[in-house]
Image 1 (cartoon, rainbow, N blue to C red):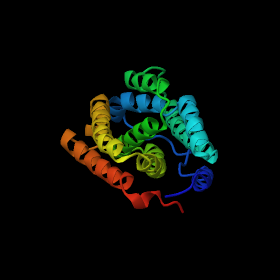
Image 2 (cartoon, helix red, strand yellow):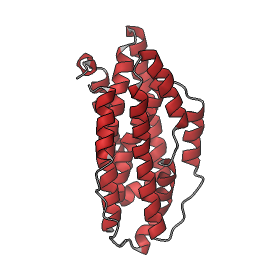
Image 3 (spheres, helix red, strand yellow):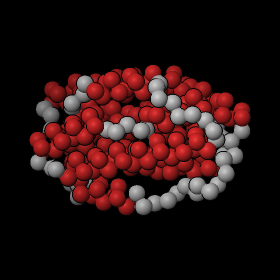
Image 4 (cartoon, rainbow, N blue to C red):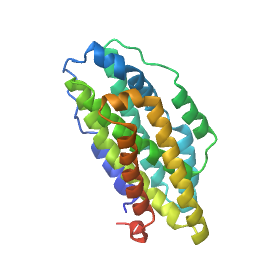
Amino acid sequence: MHTSSYWIGHFKENANQKRVIWNTKPGITDDEIAVILPSLQAWQLGETSEGKHLIAASEKYAQKIQDPKYVDAIKLFIKEEQKHGNNLGSYLDMIGKPRIKHDWGDTLFRKVRYFNTSMELWTLAVIVVESTAQIFYQALKDATGCELLKEICTDILIDEAYHITFQTERLAIIFYGKNHFSKSWRRIVYKYFFYGVSSLVWFAHKGLFKAGGNTFESYIRKMEYKYMKTLKVITSPLTVQLV
């Protein structure tokens, strides 16, 4: 388990990493664009959130646990997500395709976030979305021969691995602070929420997932692995020992 100060240091250091060579000319084909464009546009939109409601929830939570640095860590996390959106947007600009302003999946998620003030629900939601994002960006990377897009996906995948750790550690702290009964019903809620959101993401982007070599069965197996790995970390008493 890491402190908020550790994560602030991580996000600041990672911001200096330059993994995308932007003078590389896009080499995507028309056939690839036809398959991946709708999902690429939708995901780009989703990565551009200002995170105002997440910041508000983190401020309320940080005050409760007396850890003001956690808010700074959350702000840097949001900034890194926005970098993903900016990179995907730049790529869309380079291939002459528009950035969209509306998507039903993004709209639904934003409406849920608007009414959510719970750090626990925020963290759980981010873990699920980041888990699906790992499969999404790997599928996107495998679905194209464009080296520039592959570099963008690799950069995001590296970031997402740390994002999941960051959020999983926080959910573990929140979970560990609950009583036995609360932990029992939360295990059930976490599970249904995880698989429910995972299924929605598949049906919204199944064309891209399939183009990247996934079937629904293989996708669910991957998500099951991620769920079990996350649950094991969250429910382990050793997880909350700060370093």
